[in-house]
Image 1 (cartoon, helix red, strand yellow):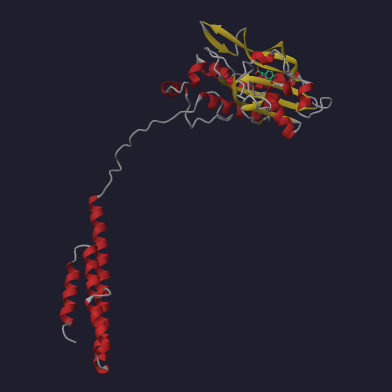
Image 2 (cartoon, protein in one colour; image 1 turned 90 degrees about the horizontal axis):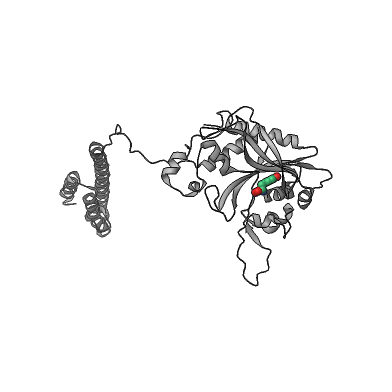
Length: 360
Ligand code: DAH
């Protein structure tokens, strides 16, 4: 067959000189593509005599193979060259110092809540939670606060809006974490030992009050739990929390509808040159409310008060965070002011645990 050598040479030269993959592809199409020169020649085989075909067939196949392999060899070579070029031109200076990134901090409330959970876990208390939107049954009635009880007014409760013909039981933003006592005992029964940290709400705003704040509820129910156990647990807790051995507490008789007897608990402190020191001196600071769980409360949670008894307490997380870390104004806790957060926030790596010591 005439002209095959010339055709072959033309394509091999073209492939050798191709500068990029696009021109290689053009060459492939015009040589061995469906309507390429080699393919058209192959179509002519049918018109040949058998003798001619015996010569031309293998020659065309060989030509097609040769062009195809020249194409793929060149394609690979172009790829290698491109990679070499990138390796030469693209580089990173890995000795450059990184750009500093602003890091967030752990909010003191989150930190202190973790501290509390670690300390109480060590004393055998599990963590429980309840809803922030609570029925007024759980928030009040079940806790022995009857509808006409003055404590309802004292709590400055936020009531959820109800339409005029909506007769569902009223709901409130919970005013304390005490309803978790009822929910926990209902669900898990007794004996139990739990703490319930969380947000609570009251319509109040000044240097030491915000409409949303945090409490930690404690509850321990068993056959023979007494006020003595309460006192020991609280003294252990305060000593661990403030990092001071042997902090003393003082119990003052008080009244809460959900406990009988009830006590407000003070911790030992001193004021020196206007500076508050916890765990020393002969001053006292009120820090929590507590008592023996009232039989009515046990009964509302389905627990038989003739068989079971125990203590409960409620403490303001924000208050003790302010005391421990010397933060003067509660309102600033919730202003999201970055300067405040950087100053009073904690490193994410500073996880509270008893082995590292709770205090910083
Ligand atoms: N729920 C009370 C409050 O918010 C605090 C409290 C007092 C909780 C005595 C208790 C308790 O469990 O025994 O004011």
